[in-house]
Every structure is written in structure tokens, then in C-alpha cells.
Length: 290
Image (tube, rainbow, N blue to C red; front, side, top):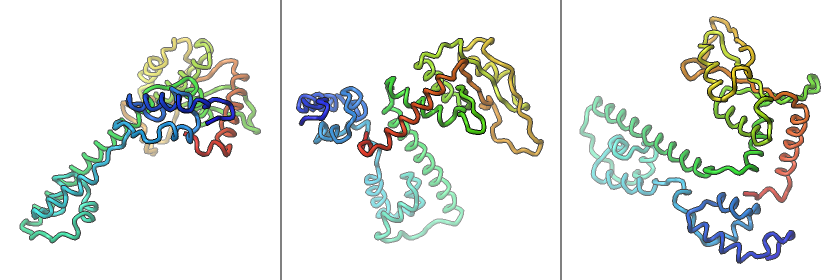
């Protein structure tokens, strides 16, 4: 195959490398990044016939659960008892075993209620385990992050959460505010990638007056690693006694404002980067991208 730019001219050689990486256990995304293949169709052809490694597959135990549920039903178990045993919902059990004969009921109403409660607890536990496993597998897909990926993520992050110049309020300066420490850490990593020197950063804490202000100031200082001189005066938020606030407790640290000094030119570049990302994403040839 000959690509317009000659990038994929040695298709067979590229395929050999892709298959070797696949057999080492790499995901599609990792292979794409390793071989610099940015075309989804090409990647599909390179990996044609090669199964995905087990760690990239989302756990699916429905077939096994269905078989076990039918076995237990034939042994005379009720929906509640099967739910306790397998940890799946009674709705699923009903679909799996509805063609099988119903067992004779031999328990009291209280016993049935107790079994139902245990079954629901088991179901919740199983769902939480599945949720955590799905998150673990998904997180593994981003075990590494290229500078290019961090750059794009940072641009989108800023355009979603950062301050922007408006026709009614024209101001070209880079200011970001968020309460999520991970968002703040990622944003600071992005600024570092862009070459923004630490001495050009200023921080301000915004927090409700009823919170532990001093503890929150220490928290953000530790997270950012910035000196005390980089922090301005904390802004206290007031609220009515009738306000039913949800953001309370030990995990509440308010919001951190991160401002970049002398950032008009950087702001203009961010706006341009964002426009470029949007235009590139909407191009017809990008609709089947990886």
C-alpha cells in the first residue's frame, strides 16, 4: 500500500512490528503511539487477525452467571436465594430461568425479607467490584501520556474551566479555577509543558467562611509546592444560614485560582490552539479516527 505522504509505504514491515507489539500485550492505543499510526483504517489492517490481550477486555461474566443461575433454579432455589448466591439482579435471574419450573415456597415472610436484603447487599458489592474493575482497565489504557496528548488535554481543560475574553468583558489573561486537586495538578503539569516559569504563577484560595481556612491554605500550598509569597489573600465566601451546602467535611478545601502573569500572548495562543483542535476534529477524514 502507498500512502499519499509515503508514511505507510512499507505496510508489511509496519504490520510485522504491529503484530509483534500486539503479541507482547500492548493495546491498540499503545501500538498506535509506538508506531505513530494516526489512521484508524490502517491500524485495523495492521492488526487484522490478531486478538486483543486479555487485560484490555472488559470483564463479561453474564454467560457463566446465566448457566449457574439455571443450575441453582433446577435445584429448587428461589430468585432471592440465587441472588444471594451469585450477586446478580433478580431482573436478570428472571430472564434467565423463567422457562424453568417454580420451586415450592417453604419460608416465612420474615425469612423471605431477610434473604432479599442479603441478596441486594451481595448485588451492590458485585456491582462495586465490576465498577472498580472497569475503572482499573480503563486507567491502564493511559499508563503513559505523550507530550502531544498532554498538550491537547490541557488546551481542552483550560477552555472548559479557564477564564475567557468576552465581547462585554475583553481581557486576555490566563486564569484557571477549580476545586478538584487532580484538575489543578494536571493543569500545572500542562503549564510546565508549555514552559511557563514557576515565578510567573500566582495562587488564590476561594473558600466558604465556615470552613477551616488555614488548613485549606496549607493543603493547596502542599499540593502546588509553591512558596508562600506566590499566594495572595484568601477570598472568603459568605452564605445564608439557610443554605444547605453539600461541599463540607474534611475533603472540602475550597477552590484554587491559578493566574499566569504577563499571559496575554499565551491566552491568544490557547484560543488559537482550541480553534485548531475543533477544526481538525470536524474534518471529514477525522470521523473514523482512533
